[in-house]
Length: 165
Length: 430
Image 1 (cartoon, rainbow over the protein chains, first blue to last red):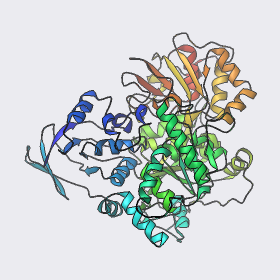
Image 2 (cartoon, rainbow over the protein chains, first blue to last red):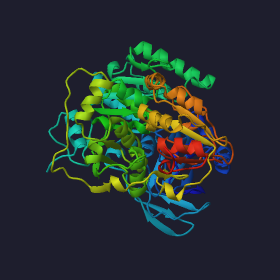
Image 3 (spheres, each protein chain N blue to C red):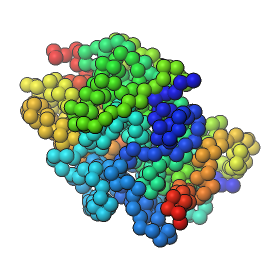
Image 4 (cartoon, rainbow over the protein chains, first blue to last red):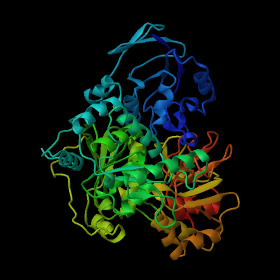
């Protein structure tokens, strides 16, 4: 169970999640400070949040559209965030899976800030509102990467096989 | 049942006769492109090799391209250090398709790849940049990926777990009116199907308008396909493709064309009458907020940007030069021009376009991504409005969330530079 710390609208681009001017900062250990840098309220909240406490951001449709910058996924992962959105743009979703950022596709989600949510494999339960919303599972091909712990360990298995290690 | 062009390309790159939409496959990559974000790719690449006790070497250095374009010359010590790290990696790995900050062979990755003959019809191109969709203009299946995914490609030479996408067939017939270009056509399409109308799908372009379009226009179409959410845009290759590859890219080898089957299955068909399109403007803050220019005319603009991987090619610069030649840019605005490559810059100089633009008051910058993504040069002040030939108008895109970005064709942008307000060149003396 965790709480919704912020609700944001449709078509949230990676320019909003991680503005271009910070793109020279690439390492996942360094990107979190710039998450939503131009949404001052959210940036402050994230930077003041205790990292060990998971939290949820609610997105609308087409979350993560635009640039392929992977920092947009690593910056949120660094804050222990789960993004629940109506749907996601392709590259952002793939980057999230590759890096292990929790993304939940929930087309009918209704949730407001401070609501408490319980996320299972099949549904999101809004405990505060006492309502349940179905999740669209990740395609099997992507599930395999999640189960491997991300694309790096998944690639390592493939590479070992290729090199005969 | 027949196959789309992308199904046939994927099948070939997997060594299969056919693939179905939704199949999960692991195709061979023909070209893997990165820009400055290669710094992150290098980091992730070394992570993959950690603990394996083998030297971390890329699968095939001849299939990797790295082009510096996002912040050139470097705007900060951080960027400069990243670029240095990439140069060291390029030298160690023997990557020859490397384009450094140079006035002879530098430029924007999505212009360098086609003009250097790095993209071939029928291949699979992946790039750590969402506008990698551009290269579908030459009949390749080309799409953007993240840095970790690129590190995986560098290690394996394949791209893991690709789901064969469905395809939307876009048929455009007729003749685009005067001062209406490929940019207006793609903005019109994005407005029609929305920013996620082609999510997880390919846009395959057909019709007489596309057949009669130059490769430059096709590059613009495919470049912005991603703004409709498309995995890729693609134009079936034809005699124009061959002409471009022979004369511009200087390619002398064999060409193999993969074309869609007549009875290919499409998830949707969109038909457009080119004759009816007027200049289009994408209004803040989404690319699908598209209006015909008649609804936006008169809006004051403080900065005009002509350039980028979308519209920084020679024909774009020519039309801008033709419009401003002998005139003066309005004192209430400023005009920045970024040729898409050093080669285009040189051609524009030789043809006198650079002089025409400068005499009118434009600032002609070095080739690069410039202000398009707000990382380097051309920032906007609070409350200012830009009209740009670039590809995105998201909030804060040009570096300031208190500014607005409108998108248009080069003709509209250049004419509006003269008036200081968004204006239709068809109403001018030009």
